Length: 432
Image (cartoon, rainbow, N blue to C red):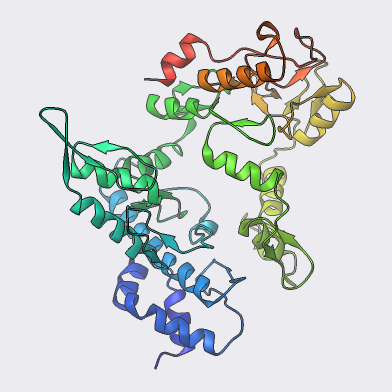
C-alpha cells in the first residue's frame, strides 16, 4: 500500500539527476500513488517542488500533470549530461524558480496518425507510441527511382527520405522535446537549441553580432539570424488587424484579446484568469508571509511577488533608477515605459493599429529606449493584406504595404499610416 508520505517524498526530489533515477524505479507506480493520494483529499493538488498546480477538473488531469513532471525530470537529466559534455559552456544563470514549471495539459495526448487516434495521459508513452509509427512506416515509390516515407499524420503531406528525418518531423506534430535545462527547466527540441540557450547568457563583451532593428547583441551569427526572423510577421489574426511572427503568438493573442473564457479560478476569492502563470502570481498575494526575500547581503526586504523583489534589487542595489525611456519627438525622459506610452498618446496624439494593444520600444546606441516605428511583414502576408484591402474597395495604390504604429494620417485616403516592409538586404540575411 502506498502512503501519502511516500508520494510527497517522490514529488519533493530536488536534484534533476537524482530525481530522474529515483523516478525511473517508481515510474509505473505513479498512478497507484496518485490514486492513494486522491482518496484522502478532495483537492487534486500537485506537491512537486516549486510547482503549485492544482486540477480544476478531475483526478485524471492531475495524473497527466505528474506524468509530465516525470518526463520533464528525465529531460533535465539529459540536459545535465549534455552540459557536462561541453566544458566550454557555462551553466545556465537564470532564476531557478521556474525549473519545475511545465506546460498546461488540459486534454489527453491524441495520436493523429492515419487510422490510429490512440490517446494517452502519459507524455512519455505518447511520444514513444508516435515514434513507433515512424519506425514502422513503409517506403513508397516517388518517381522512377526515388523512395520516400510519407507522414501519416492528419492533413500532413510531408515526405521524408529517411526514417530518421520522418521521426524528427513527427516531433513537430507532437511538440516533443528531447532535452531540458537542469537549472531553469526550459525545454528544447534539440541539443543545439539548448546550447544556444546557454550561449545567450554569456557576458556582453562576447556578443559581437548586433541586430540592426532592435540593437540586441548575440554571441553567434546564427543566433542573430534566428532572432531576426522573429521581427518578421507571417500571420494575421482573423478577427482584427494584428500580425505576428509565430502561430503560438497568434494563439496567445486570440486567447487574451478575443476570448472571454477564464478557466483558472482562485479558490480563495473571485479572481479568475486565462493561464496558470497568472493564477500562480495571484495566489502569492494571499500568502500571510512574504514569499520572496531579497538575497542581497544584510537586506531585509521581502515581498509577496517575485517581480517586486526584482524591481527593488534593480532600484536599490544596482542603482537602476535613472530614466531609460525617451520621447523621440520632444526628448522628455521617463523611468517607465507606461509613462512614455501615456505621454505619446496624450501629448503627441500617437495611436496604434487595430489589434496592437501597446507600443514597442527599441534601445538605441545611447542606451535610451524610444518608440519603434517600423514593423516588418513577410511578402506573403503583405500580399494577403493587400487582397483584403482590395476586397474592401480600397484602390491598390492606396493600400498599405505594412501597417505600422503611426502619428496622424498617412499618404492613403483612409487615414491609415504605413511604413516599409523588410528590404532586400534584410530578407537576404533572414534566408541564410
